[in-house]
Length: 228
Image (cartoon, rainbow, N blue to C red):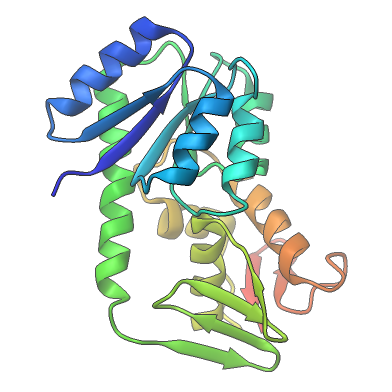
């Protein structure tokens, strides 16, 4: 069964081109042209990936991304202005998994989408085995991809969960930012280590009682991050 993608952009020519190209690869493509429409569709339909422009009418791409993260960990790829690092950083802050700079080459878009879907499906197959890791008041359900602390579920994005899972399954092993980037995002990911720092900071804000004094995700200064 083909993958289902939601493409969100108020430039109809861009949407038409992306939709046509993805459909050539047997993907099912839905389209939205403003933030409110995109959010409604994301609530009512299960997508394998959302391609989301930053600049949208009614709700911005950042706002849409933030709202979606309240109920779904679907991979989100932001479309950002050329060379605008702040858009990229904000997109990651709000829960995006990746970003593509406009104007873009449609072949790059397809390659990035396929890479994300490949990693997602590979991980799903690998996690068919039931595995629940419990450490003190933390419980990590690797099959259901859910985190509980003191029996309260903590809502993580896909990448936040991936980072935490890697650290928890390898306690006291220190991972450099470069190594985390490669293991979690893949060797073909074009972003830099700031991506890791943003996700670690967001992860700590969600799981740590006091993020400035981490209980779970620790920093070994000058080396990297680890769980204990």
